[in-house]
Image (cartoon, rainbow, N blue to C red; front, side):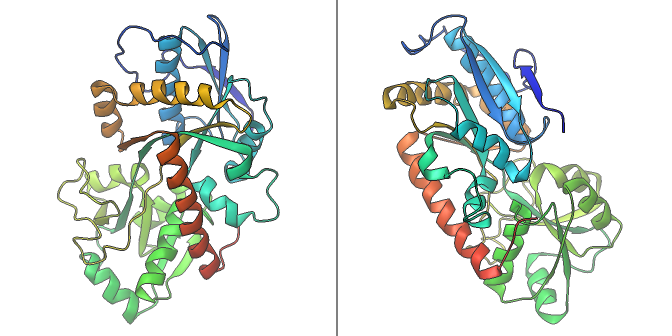
Length: 325
């Protein structure tokens, strides 16, 4: 796939923040420098949208150019490896998601970099929960019914691919319920949604943005959302905890890392300004309209969260014997 280098100005897809007066860039950077913000996925997805919004805000605060470098491939590994091998001069940022935490186990012994050693946490930005959806005509009426049906007969569930957040959440559900649902991986969320709407699948634990429009149009029925609180875009849909399964919580989060050699003082300054951008009220409101749940955390808290996610999903991947495509 062709690599795309795009300036962030005007391309944040409606998430551009309204910012206060410009903050001063770290001493290692000067006006006119260019920051390379690697997004290891194609343009247009939630990770890309958030990176462009944060990059635009950071560029405005620091009076620098921020270039989004989309480097998709290998489940996010190609872009992450490029960032891990970049100089620690403060000019390279990396966007990551839950997929990168899962990749530690999925690509164990095969990955070209070490997520926890070769990269340094900067900030957690936001999460987007899974939406448990079935066809509108499905006999499965609610989440408790899904559990009962999964125990009574062999259901099939689609996902956007092996090792993706929808697949991991499905395996989490299977582990909690001790059911044997047949997993059918697709090459992306859109084709799996098409087959679910058409009745070829029973259920998908979907990425929120991939299914919300179909829920709103009445083509799909949402049974539950896998977050702690109900989602403002579908306030009528219960959480998995409200539906009787508090242990099933899963969000496809997005965050910022830098090469491990980047000085700690720079990381602290970068984190403070990234979080300042992410906490602007207008930014938060627009992010929520895109399906995000804002969850800004600095280097220390995000670092602990990242290690926990690597361990949590590692256990699920190992137990389910999930392998990468």
